[in-house]
Amino acid sequence: MTRVLKSERRAPLSGDVRSIVVFLHGYGANAADLMGLADPLTEHLPDTLFVAPNAPEAIPGYAGGYQWFPIPWIDGSSEEEAERGLIAASADLNAYLDALMVDEDVLPEQVVLFGFSQGTMMALHVAPRREDEVAGIVAFSGRLLNPEVLADEVVSRPPVLLIHGDIDDVVPPESLPQAAEALQGAGWKDVFAHIMEGTAHGIAQDGLSVALAFMRDKAGF
Image 1 (cartoon, rainbow, N blue to C red):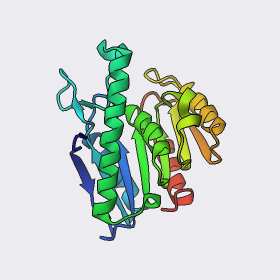
Image 2: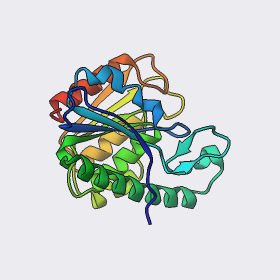
Image 3: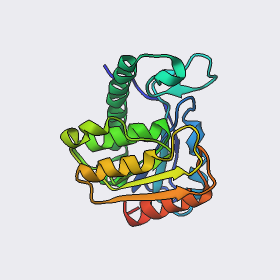
């Protein structure tokens, strides 16, 4: 049985939902963490609904912090626990997306997954395994999980934008070219990348500008 993900939302500036950006937060954060990005984006995407679900598991010791799945080198969990968590969270996120599209009466090609860190890992894991292709994936400061099985498990290949800070000390910057190589090796045609110079584990203005251009030009928002 899937878990219901509670989420925050920002209604479109125009009042009409013609596209949706789904923010997927990182480890130890929550739905509110990325919703602030709706402020600079909404004036450029006036018909876009912004939503942000909380990850399914509260983290002990993190006030208001959630995780999509355990991370062994942070919490001491096993690789098996992390894999089980990823599978369960993927089912939760798929159910959330399915319900969201029905409730808002939109098609998959009107939805962008916008992830940060562990949220990026979720976006890059879930979207390629969905039968109906989403409009695109904006992937900040994360990595592609289980790249060795992607070619065998991929179902759809939405456009992907990989963005990473060049001094990230949480998720190594090398994760970007590794993800790009795996995606292209699995048959992706539209893989784009941007390096945020002088940026650690975060989202810089130049990265957000590139993400906006991607959503407008490649995802059709």
